[in-house]
Amino acid sequence: MEKKYIFVHTFGCQMNVHDSEKIVALMENSGYESVDDVRKADLVIINTCSIREKAAQKVYSQLGRLEKLKSKKPELIIGVGGCLAQQWGAKFIERVPYLNLVFGTHNIHHLPEFIDTIEKTGVPVVKTEFHESVKSLGIPVQSRNGRVSSYVTIMQGCNNFCSYCVVPYVRGHEESRNFCDIVDEVKTLTANGIREVILLGQNVNSYCGTNGSGHDFADLVQEIGMISGIERIRFTTSHPKDLSDKLVNCFSAVDKLCEHIHLPVQSGSDRILRMMNRCYTSSDYFDRVDKLRTVCPDISITSDIIVGFPGETDRDFQATIDMMGKIRFDNIFSFKYSEREGTAAAGLGDKVSECVKRDRLRMVQALQERHTIERNRAMVGKNEEILVEAISKNSREDMAGRTRTNKIVNFKGNYELIGKTISVTITDAYLHSLRGELTKEEVIKC
Ligand code: 5AD
Ligand code: SF4
Image 1: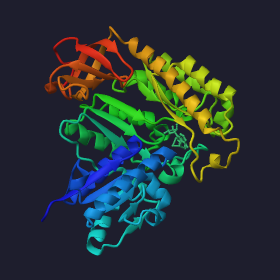
Image 2: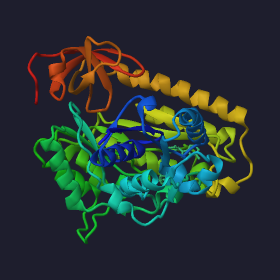
Image 3: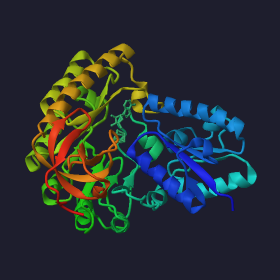
Image 4: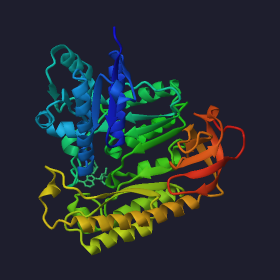
């Protein structure tokens, strides 16, 4: 049988990155091989994101490029999955007539059948039914050679309905995966050489074990912490309102839980937080950060901030700046508010002008750069435990790994260190990475 090739282009968050890994694994089982060169592909899947306007625009430009490719190679199958596909369904084919397939966030596990139908009939397929997510959550992903870290989906969907956010509409309501299935998946990954797992979900803190197990997220972290072979546990994303003391205490009680938390705050203004339907105040957020830093003084805290939410005054914005000054995040993702169709905030008046949003974004980013550098410089001279991941992107003579606080460290070393945990002394600090030297030749764990 002639070999067929699949190319997957991923937009958006880590959930999408992991969904793309599942897409590749499914199609590899159906005889496809994954390629990095789109021109070689017989099947192209665009895994879309609709969280902000910019993300959706990028999907269109990519599709525009594919139209040219398809005009030269008419048998090319082009499919779109992910959040934008879920949102638009059949309307996607009306807007982009050369598409062969639109599949939703809960339908990934049917992909080989969809492709088979298209190959046999040539008829486009649109499937966006919204009731089968759990089957998609557990699709096994082969661990690639040399990989040391792997995502593990533990839940998907979201019940929070933050007023700006499209996720609950495109990913559905919260559904947790079976506790034992997750633990078994992690055990299988360790057998394939994986040393670090990143537990994924839109709101991992509200994980609730199914089949009546009653296990919460902290129980899951503790259980995974007991699996030999796993050295590091990370998770993302957390909602501040659901960050329990029990989970915070895991940062000292579970050795393998890395000292990093991504805890999106969105705004420092209580008025805006209320309008965003975030269900906490700035003071609740400060309390959570205090508790985290009491339990784990070196914890790295990263966050998301939106500027220019409708009605955001200079005073509201100043509250965000003040909060950043007080907390001094290790890093943030910052965004201009963009209206998303169907969300509660789309109906709000008193919109902030594009130019004010741009200025506010610049101010937030400039301040954060100062804080990031300050937090990174504080690590110079310290010995850090690094899990070596790959050859450095900067230089082929360097290796790259991450600290437990999720900072990239480049250092002189050889590729045999990949997958090993070593000790490095930090010698320099930059905005996006640190530089280090091997502290001692011997490896801490391998
Ligand atoms: N506009 C701007 N930023 C948004 N985010 C989510 N929806 C919007 C929107 N409509 C940001 C939030 C969230 C991150 C993943 O994306 O900060 O935490
Ligand atoms: Fe969106 Fe809020 Fe759910 Fe996060 S918690 S996915 S911002 S609705």
